Every structure is written in structure tokens, then in C-alpha cells.
Image (cartoon, rainbow, N blue to C red):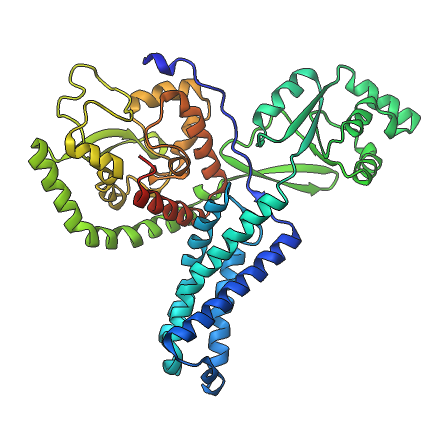
Length: 473
């Protein structure tokens, strides 16, 4: 075992996506309308096709309105008015561009093929393209101004219950660095509750007073409260602006989601598979992969041939590097890359963790690794079904065996096909030390738990941008 894989840090969940309030959702909707209106005005100036002709076209107003409505509905459905995965204003640009790329497709199809729009067709098509950039620019500006003027308020979370449970909860929460956790261990939890019920004084519970005195806005209780106490308890906490949650310590939502439903006098927890693991979404991801991969291979074939020739002239055969990696459901497969290292790079040492600035790298290999062009043959892995365009990056079985012993949730990465790029790939450098594997896993689990097809498009947009600026090597 490598010396630097002996002590990995504890897995820390990534902060949850930011939820928008009603005011900010309305502000974003207004910003999008302004961006789209500006795009229409600019397109009219460029093409000199007056949109004033639109009312005279039979069905023209209805067709354009339907195209615009499709855009708005797609923005709403993929969550652009509900939540944000962005951690910076720059990330919000990627999110807006990804959303626009998805939302403008129906509008482009409608405006291209709708009969009768010929007099203003070029203006409408150009307006759709310009709107993708204007909306992203305005959202970027709004995000930056909001972050400066009204930064996110840190959460103050109180955790109450048995001492050993209170100690365990914070490590499993999705916290930001600014969040503050107040631990209130109670050895006599049941006795305190019983006394409060006898006296009829919820407000006199010592730990509940401590929660108020420390100005906590969230309260997590690790123990069960008597059902008859709940109405008065909730009236008290809600009147003081305290959000209450219960944390059953024996239940962990690993690789699944939960819904809570009332059935008579019981509250039942119903587990269900993560959205990314359902057959329907698996089929949608596979269709998405093939829809993009087949045209990409056709377009990139000259590039692939040129790189193959460069590798051959620089260091001879083989041009492709084949290596066994662990994929979906733990099955091994042969990953393809352009060879970037000497043929005998591991002949004496055995498996060695790849690092930046490798002395074993060839001259062409250094360029390919810096630009990530060595990964292009993995499009054939996607075509074969071994990989997806987006997903957790696959590791070698030698390291998988080590990491799964150190990180109990490591095998959850193998619930889906590994990807050429992924959520961890766009947030961390391509080559990281093995001590960062826990952090990489936390990003991969965040991706599995919050997946949507929009998230895949967002990751691909940011990957493309990092490829252009060589920032992911």
C-alpha cells in the first residue's frame, strides 16, 4: 500500500444546493425577461427585419409566444428559479449557459420550421442565440451584486440529545464554513421531557432555553419526543423562528432517498432508489450519451488521427494506452487513452498513483495531459457502454480495494457508469494526491444524490470551458 493512502480524512458531505426564496425567484424571472427582451432588440437591429410584422402573420404571435413559453417552462422545470448549485458568480454563468442550451432547443426548432415566419425568421433565431448569452450575463451580474450586498446568512444549528449521538451528527451534515453548530448533550433527556409534561411548561426545558439563548435558527433532536407533546412543542419553536428536525441515528440515506408519509397514527419512512439509478433515467442518460458521442466521434475523427500520429512519431507504438478500471456495479473494463507515458513506466514499480509533473511523461504526453486530449479515446468506451460522458471518474482495481476499506461509502460511486468528466472533476484538479480521495468521493456522492440531466449539461459546459483555458489539468 502506498504510504500516502494510510490515513484519509473523514468523509464530509458537500454543502446542499442553495434554495431560492420567493423574492429572489421573482427577481431572477424578471432578469431573464429583461435579458430576452434585450436580445430581441439587438437581433432586430442586426438583421433589420422589423418584428412589427409579427401581428400581420397568421398565427405568428401565438407561435412566438409558445416558443418563449417553452423556454420559461424548461427554466422552471430544471430548477433555475428554485435552487442553485453554484458556489460563485462564475459558476452561475456556466449554469445559465447550460440551462439556455437546453431551453433554446425547442424555440430554435419552432422558429425554424413554423410556416409563415419567413419575413422575421432570421431575427427570431438570432434572438434565441443572443438570449442565451444576455440571460447568463445578467444573471452573473445579479449573482455577484447579491453576494456582495446580501451575503448568505450562516446557519446556527443546535443539536440536542444523548452525548454520543450529539457528537456524531455534525460530521454527517452538509455545512458551510460559516455555519455554526451548538452541541447540547443531555444525559437526562427523557427525565427532562417527563418533567416538562407534568408541569405543562415546555418553555422551562433547560436545553430548549439554551437553544433560544444562543440564537439558534435550527434545532436537530436525536431522540424521540412523545407524540402528545408535539403540538405544543411546535407552537413554541415556530413562534420563536426555530426550525425543528429529528435525526434517527440508525437510519442513513446512503444510496437512497426517503419520503415520509402518515398512515393512521404512524409516520412511515419509504426508501426509494436515487433518481440517477432508476431504469427510466438510466435509459435517458444512455440516450443522451449516444446522441452526443456519435456526432462527436465523427467530427473529431481527424483530430483523433492527428493525435495518434503525433504519439507514434514521438515515442512509437502503442498509440493507445489500455488499463483496467472498475466501473458500474464493480465490473472491470478496459479504459482507452492516448499513451502519454513511456511504455515501461510501471514495469518495475507496479501500479503508481498518477501525479502532476510526472517524469515518466513523454514530450507529446505532457501536452496531451495538460489539455486533457489524452482522454478523447474514452468516447469509444462511452459508445461501448462501459462509461458515460458524465459520472464519477473510474479508478484502478488496485486502488479501489484500498479506498473501499478506508471509506465505507466508496462503492456507491459504482452505482452508475463512470464518466469522462464529473462533478468532482470540475471542482478539483485532474491529478490529486490520494489524501484527497475522501473529498473527491464527497463530490461524487453529491452528484449521485442531486443528479438531473441539467446537472450533466452543466458539468459538460464547465468542462468545455476548463478545456479551453487549460485549468483542469
